[in-house]
View 1 (cartoon, rainbow, N blue to C red):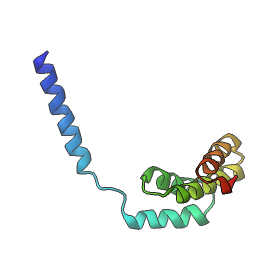
View 2 (cartoon, one colour):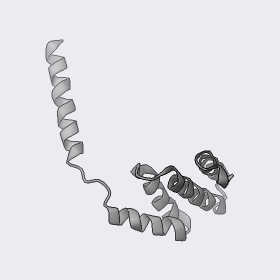
View 3 (cartoon, rainbow, N blue to C red):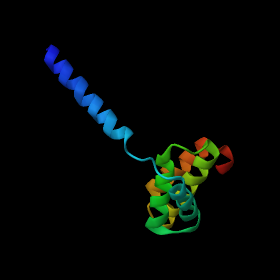
Length: 98
């Protein structure tokens, strides 16, 4: 049992070291994602908006805007369930978007 605990600890430390060495998304990439999320259509916009959402760097106001943009893109594609989820999330973050 003690050996399994040690092996688990070593595996966890190796995973943490590996993840720590992974580069974060570059600021230039996020800037480009903003431009695409705000101005493009289709899957390109959805991908960029999703990257912004997953970056974890946005204020709640900016996050609301991104959810709104992605929701409207989903709506334009006829993906109404996904659109509703994103538009509801935008509304939760910023009631002026309701």
